[in-house]
Length: 428
Image (cartoon, rainbow, N blue to C red; front, side, top):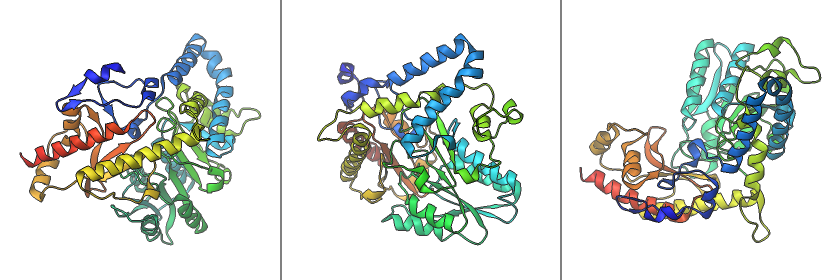
C-alpha cells in the first residue's frame, strides 16, 4: 500500500484506501469505488477456493459423485443461518439474474403465467432481469407492466404506491429488487411482499445487492414466494456464487433450467428440489462452497469497538461511510441527496448537475468503453473506477459503493474530479 502515494492521475495522487484494503487484491493505482457491480473477494477466501479446486482436480470423480453433496450442504447451512432461511430451501445458482430467469420459466412452464396475465416490475429493475421478463412474457402471451418509481424520491411510500398502483386482477407475479441496482434504493420490501402475497400475487425478489448489505434479513419471515441473491457482491464470495430460495409450498414441480441425470435418479434421503439443483452437469461450484469462509472472514474483518463487532459492525460501518460520502459529494457538487437516509444501504446514486439540453445530447452520443464517456475520463485522468449512468433513462448519475476497504478521502477525491470533469465538459 505504500506505493499509493506515488501513483497519480493527471490531477493529483490517488488517495489511500482503508488499511483493510490489504485483504483484497485491488490494483493499488486505482481508486476503486464500485464494489456494487461485481463485488470483491478477500485473498483468504480466494485461497480457500483454490484448495477446493485442487481437491476437485486431484480426484474429480470422487469430488462430484461423493464429496460435493456434503460440501454443498455445509455452504447451504452457513448461508441459511445468515439469511434466516432453512437450508433445505436454498438452491445454488450462478447469479441473481439466473435465479430470476429460473423462476420466470417455471411460472411459464407450469401454467402459473399464461396468455393475458401480467407481471408487475418497475423502471429501476436490473435491465437483464427486465429483458428476461419480457422474453418469457412474450413466449406465453403475458405482459410485463412497468411501474415508474420517482427519482429523486422523498419516501419509501412513493415506491410502494408506484408498484401497487399497477397491480390488477390480471397480475400473477411481481418482480421487485430488494435494493435497486441503478438507483441504489432499499425498497420497502416487507410491506410490498405482505400486501402482494395477500392479493394472490407471487413475489419474485431480486435481492442481488441485499445479502451482506441489508441488516436483519429473514427469508422465512419475509414470506416472499421466491428470493434470489448474489453472494459475490456484499458477502464477498468469489464470482459466480448466488442462491435461489424457494418457499416450501412453491417447491413442488420447481426445477432448474437445465436437468441432469439426477432428474430421473432421485437421491435417497434427499429432496428432489436439492437433488436437481445441486448438480446440473459439470460445473465449478467452488465459489458457492466457500460461502462459510467468506461469512467468517467478514465477521472478523473489523475490530470490535464500543461493544459492536462482527457483521453488525460491517453493516453499520458501510452504511455510515456511504451516507457521509454521499453528503460530501452532494455538498461539493451543490446538489441535494436524491433519496432519504432510510432508503440507503451501501450504495448511493447521486444526480449530477445538468448541462444545457443540446450539450447533454452531444455528450450522451459520445463513444464510451463504459456507460458514459465521463466514466472513461474519470478512469483515464483520475484512475477512479465508479459508474456513471442513467436512472430510468431520465437522470445522469454517479453511483458510489462503500465497503470496508474504502476510505473517506477516496470520495472527496471523486468529488473534486467530478467538479473538474463537468467543467471540462462545459468548455468543449
